[in-house]
Length: 185
Ligand SMILES: C[S@@+](CC[C@H](N)C(=O)[O-])C[C@H]1O[C@@H](n2cnc3c(N)ncnc32)[C@H](O)[C@@H]1O
Image (cartoon, rainbow, N blue to C red):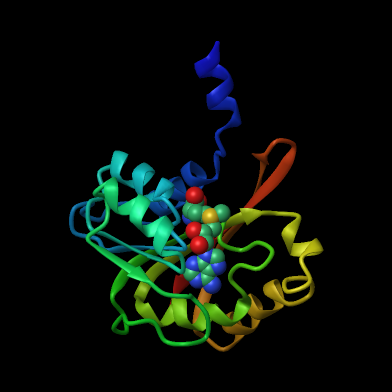
């Protein structure tokens, strides 16, 4: 009974995000492909990806405390403590096959100005998966009429192309989640 309640309370977003990464990387060698977990927090998405057999993962997060917790799980090869925004991260161009970015868009978190930087570090043909609470698109000032238009502008500029935009239920209690999948061009 207790396990059931805990399972119900657990946010499903890390699993949804990891599933979308897995789908985007279908057919690739799971031990070879390189994934960056953006705003990795304590590593919940990395744990899901590891269960799926992905082993070549790095994490970036602005919080050293979060990264310390993630490090204990021994999921990630490189842990980068940095704020993700317009400023270049200490990562070479075209490094990753995929980015997983889960629950990182929210009040006071990532802004749309980080999207070109995410695109920069992903190889052409690679994928960017972004999952967050759907209502944030409409209620967070930084995102309202800003986040999706910025995504569209990047597509119009030929930097990436949208593969899917899926709304799913129960991101948190009765709140929907949304997952965007983009292919980097
Ligand atoms: C709600 S947690 C999500 C953690 C993890 N991705 C998950 O799904 O469980 C949000 C994380 O984003 C990080 N964060 C927020 N804004 C950030 C920024 N601009 N750059 C890097 N990390 C940021 C926070 O430190 C926190 O660990």
